[in-house]
Length: 515
Image (tube, rainbow, N blue to C red; front, side, top):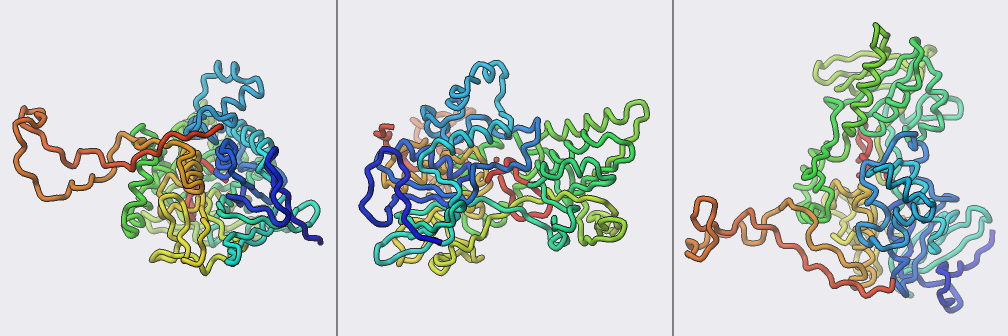
């Protein structure tokens, strides 16, 4: 193995001085969120960036790109549009590049197929000059002598080791599948292919279709889509399909217009400003915002079951809420699942041939950050403290910026894994890195006032004067709790030349799987 330095990746940029190139920003991982950062940074003149990913190409949940599935956010939630609609990296620009604007126009789609979103991201990732695939980051550390982060990575094709220096790091390494404890020793081993996570569903779909008995565990969107796809494909009356969840019901996602305002920068600011214990109590109560199933998917499942029952047709499908799988073991007859029904407080056993775990995702804990671990400042539960600008709090010995994307659910709330906030978060990080407003961001993004304005809890003021605005009954109406909360002043317009992994919950999957 040899070691050499990587040339700076930006086309048309002047070559740096000999030695390790210094970047203003190095992104580790290239999922949709860091890809959005790369796309927005591409239009910022003079900003030197590099984005690294171990994969040989961009891949966005390939195991869940089931035909007919769509994003649960509008196409405007692409890499850039909600921050810079004029960007050449927008979804509409992608459609134009592929001569698909008119077909898209006539299709009247607001929610695009997942396969098309994946292809759009592949198009952007292949063209953005700062993105480098086949680069496995093995170490990231702070160098106090140079005042820079040092990043070491290996070329997966050649085995060569490279180094880069950065003033700022942005972690976008995504999430990893959550495997419930009863299945920890059973998951997809070379000798057995009977337990798998929904992240690998398409790789195993044919064998799942042919198996006599299949059980899907988890009542989030991914679980519903896997169940529906298997229900449609498994038409033999001998086939049995079960869907288990410990949730009390197969519930629809909260998708009202005002409910969706929880996925705005306004709500993010409000949630971040709450006390840590309040945030920790609030988040588990908001599952219907980001861990349930779209109403359309639930309706499609019911329609399919209804069609099966016409003329006395046999429906060999079981949908069981309120059930927790407490044990699992391989037997001569297949997989034996020990189950418990919460409301009836009864235990029972089910025998099945295959299990699909649609049990969500959790943030990765990469070994590459071990050199920085001792420098992290943590909250009362040992989690990293993360600022409103998504910067991780570090001790005073490190002056560079360490930022995260989709690892701040505990500080920024339900919008953290949502694609609709990806471009805005990337712009917030860029503005922080550049120390100026390279992208102008709106001061207010929701009609809902999520918190009290400053002074709303003060002692009542003197009676309103006659000049005060009259209320509905003709009496003066003082300002009060209904007054919109103040927002930080919007940054000046730039002079540039240029929806949710779920937490490690056994039975939920994110509204929109991200990286």
